[in-house]
Image (cartoon, rainbow, N blue to C red):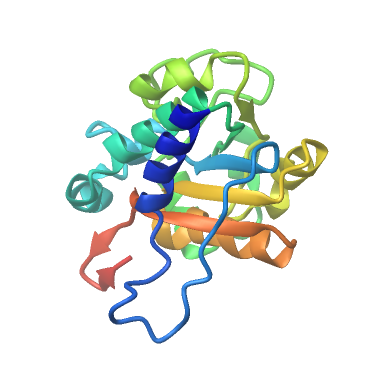
Length: 217
């Protein structure tokens, strides 16, 4: 039990709501309650986190500077060591998704560069090692038979998948959140979970975002 609280304290120390010295808003804190708290990672996939991924050119600098890959790994490891349920919300596109009649700018871009593409909803052909596949070093955590992999979200948030159902069915009301991309899927998951009544803590160095000419995501 002592080891559990020691490792949990390390997780909590990594969670940053605001810099208390400069914050204009109060820091509400978070308490990990066994059986009610889960780790959620969004899009821990090659297209975001591998140098070979199609988005690495715009996210790679942020991923590297934040030490994002290693920090997500540390969260997975700590959660597994302490029996904290782990959830993954992946991003997949099937051939039928390329038949949409209208798209937002980023949807059009992702489809054009074949980001997160899979051969189909009912096949894993071509999935292994693809951009849609999970980063290799995370597979020992994700493929352990215990991690709950939600159905894929299609735009940014969990409104289009079964994540919230899966959380509620397991009695989860507190979520530690990390993953990709900070200002898109991760933030959208955070906002929807808050609207749904969950308590959410974002681990600021377990995420990253695009750095482009228009600004730093």
